[in-house]
Amino acid sequence: MRKLGSLCLAVAMLFTSSRAKAGHVADFAHLQKVAAKGDSQAQYMLGLAYEFGRGIAQDLGEAARWYQKSADAGNPGAQAHLGNLYAEGRGVARDETAALKWYLLAAVRDDSVAETNLGCMYFSGKGSVRQDAAEAARWFTKAAAQHNPLAEANLATLYFEGWGLPRDPEKAASLYLDAAKQGNLYAQARLAWIYEHGVGRNQDLAESLKWDRMAAQHGYPRALNNLGYLYEHGLGVRKNFPEAAKLYCEAANSSLAEAQQNWTNIQSSFSGLPAGCDEAARWLAKIAPQGLGNSDASVEVGPETQVGSSIVSGAFVSEKH
Image 1 (cartoon, one colour):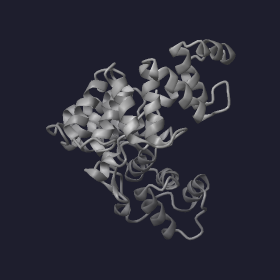
Image 2: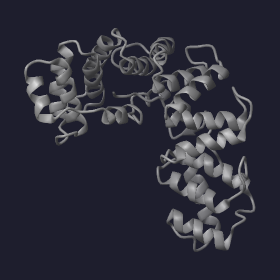
Image 3: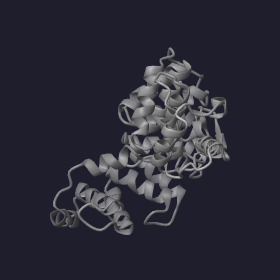
């Protein structure tokens, strides 16, 4: 489990960072004046502006300074963000103990971001806490009760694998579904696999195709590869080898091991194949539209597939507001 936990605080924050950027930011000059007067919410907003470069050039040091002021005044959002900066060593020296401190302060005020990241720390045993999957599940559950999609995706993984909780694929599928509906790409890809294989849900290739397509539209490597697998084998969709090759190629560019294997297999089978993904698809449509004679050589990314020294199913994600 420790190998899985090492990925927990790797920042793949597709939901929260976009949520922060989508929020309205007051006129920067006005925000500075209000923050300078000690308004903790303005200080928090000013920290966001500096962290994400909204209305001002990005400056993580300044972001940390304003988050600190707001966090000291008890603002849970600023506390959670300050915890993120310490956990990642962005704008401040990396300090997992300090990250834990700020996450705990925000979590006791029901900040779902802090609760999610606390769950990650307990799962991986970071920040001076003992590795404890059950405690991780407790914090994920608190955040998931607020429909935090990353917490739901992480909690779903615990249920799916039986880590810290009784194994429950049906519960996992329900949590993945709620997170997927909110745009969580990891949950969308996991849900697609669940529907393809009928684990925790009745097999439904059309649903599998839908969720893989949704995540693939955002360039999510697992979904790109597995969507390619569906196209190559005609699962829920008409066989389309050139399209499958293009998807494998795009996923391989992200260094996903399964996609690299699939793309390398295609490259080694066709002399003169262009290196570019779009060009390769057009070339294959003319030269070999039916694909390889042995499609069994291709692989999809499964929930327990090992990639390097880590297991994809445990690729928990932490978040920012």
